[in-house]
Amino acid sequence: MRGDWLRDVVILGGCGHVGLPLGLALADAGLRVTLFDTNAAAVQTVRSGHMPHREAGAQEVLERTLASGSITASSEPSSVQSAECLIVVIGTPVDEHLNPDPQAVVNAVESVEQHLHDGQLLVLRSTIFPGVTRMVERLVERLGKSIDVAFCPERIAEGRAMDELHSLPQIVSARTVRGSERAAELFGRIAKTIVQVQPEEAELAKLFTNSYRYIKFAAANQLYMMANDFGVDYERVREAVVQDYPRAADLPGSGFAAGPCLLKDTMQLAAFNNNNFALGMASMQINEGLPLYLVSRMAARYPLDTMTVGILGMAFKGESDDTRSSLSYKLRRVLKVRAADVLATDPYVTDDSSLSTLEDVLARADLVVIGAPHDLYAKTEIDQPVVDVWNLRGGGVLV
Ligand SMILES: NC(=O)c1ccc[n+]([C@@H]2O[C@H](COP(=O)([O-])OP(=O)(O)OC[C@H]3O[C@@H](n4cnc5c(N)ncnc54)[C@H](O)[C@@H]3O)[C@@H](O)[C@H]2O)c1
Image (cartoon, rainbow, N blue to C red):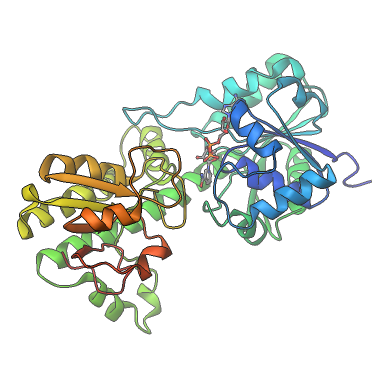
């Protein structure tokens, strides 16, 4: 009978930003889920009933699924053995020279190879370099196992996972009809729509999704700098452009395009295409250049070398505690060269001892920059001039 094969799911990388919400959604949908993660501290945090990172709506599902016994966490590789379905969602960052590591997911599968068995469905969910699905298929062939390999990319935005896992279409791909059907059945438990394609199509679909978004943010940021240099508030122009004009309705506001995915995946795609990705490379220059641009504008307008600058928000985006590849940190580094002193604060980032309290920053800073657009800062009373590239406070974005 359909679905009978599917009861136990193990998620390799299960306590990460993507693995944990997915595990919670699957457990809530009636499956028995084991979160296998090499990060013993994160495993312990999850076991004790706490989310290791902010994710709206996840805490209550964690408590519910732990209490019902439908979810467990382990750092023991043998936990993979019980899985009818193994989902791999480890991090796949580029290195310090922006090179992807096509071996990362293959190595992670290899690290549990003695616990793999015939009949399993092996789902790759990390964002991968094109061709990695084929590499894992070859590994499985070498091991002589009868395992269906599927690539089913994750496309949620951090912080919205508990909604988007249900509302977004799920792209599913496998070389065989059986693999594709089983993967569709797995994700059919949580997603309303399944889109079935070939593995190479799915690999590109995920990288195109993120690169396109990164390029759109770069377009907005370039136009922002152009308007700003002309002494015009980009936000007023943008509002005029998009008003009742559907063809430009998706023109983004200005702001830091950062975090662990967009730049990294654009660089994966560039590397895949022999570094021939002019739009992607230009987008990196623009988005990564925005903090430098802001500092040069501030220096032109204020005597920065005599001033203490306060940065509000160090996470890579609003309402998040994730500081990975956050441009607020780049902003701080650049400001430290130009300003007399730099202070930074974030209500959600708890593992950075260099941060100050909001009160302290507001008491000591001469000039304030919004780094991450946390809602809190929209309403905070601030006496100093504010550089607000996000237009969080509604006063425009002119610097
Ligand atoms: N963060 C996002 O918003 C997002 C969205 C869509 C897709 N993705 C993709 O999903 C993947 C995971 O990203 P993330 O943000 O969840 O990363 P993460 O670093 O938060 O999580 C990865 C987890 O894997 C664990 N891990 C690493 N190697 C392991 C191994 N060999 N065995 C078991 N556990 C291991 C780590 O300890 C960590 O907890 C990446 O490929 C990323 O590009 C991320």
